[in-house]
Image (cartoon, rainbow over all chains, first blue to last red; front, side, top):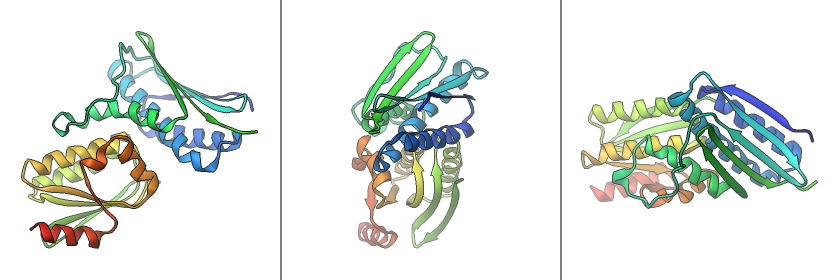
Amino acid sequence: MATVELTFSALPAHVRTARLVATAIARRTGVEESLLDEVRLAVGEACSRAVEAHRVHCPGEPIRIELRDDSGRFEVTVSDQAPSDEIQQEQPLDLGMLSDSFMSGFGIAVIAGLADDVEVFPSPKGTNIRMSWPAPQ
Amino acid sequence: MDLKLDHRTEDRLTIVEVEGEIDVYTAPRLRELLIDLVNKGNFHLLVNMEKVDFLDSTGLGVLVGGLKRVRAHDGSLELVCTQERILKIFRITGLTKVFGIYASVDEAKEAHGKDK
């Protein structure tokens, strides 16, 4: 299946659309039904993180998602254009330090727990999150 | 599906019924409801997640924020959830250790009654 690309403005309302598109393409690509919830959540987390980053740094710029069938794997790349020096990694759980905004760092932890394979590429020009799942033909 | 919210108070426990998707778009509405309930003196909250179709880390953040607010008043925020796909998110993030999670509203009410 050819690559599908989607760009959307950095609005929370569009994250649901991105989730639905990703899930639909995953199903069509052959991702197992039992993994579709994981695809939906992981793509949603990546897009939510991108939307939040754009709202802070560049609200007018779009966020891009690429979905592709890459030799037996369904691969999703979510790219933002917000400068990022580093991505918050998993941290020890301490309720005192948890806040609504801190939880955005949990997004990456959730993705890492869900996707079969995840790579995060932060840079001053933006962050790419690439994740993939098996998609038997 | 959008987010539907409702709440009722039984005894000293305020039960928040949540239905639909809790994500970056809808979570602010749940946050506002929890803040409003706490501001009105409801410090023992039970959030029923049985009709939640989708929950992401933004939603988790709102629940943690609610928990912090009620704990500041010696209160509690507990959950009703049996859906594996929702429970999985709590497990991945380690939040099963932070929230009391019950299989039904009745089970939570019973446990809450014993704590009184």
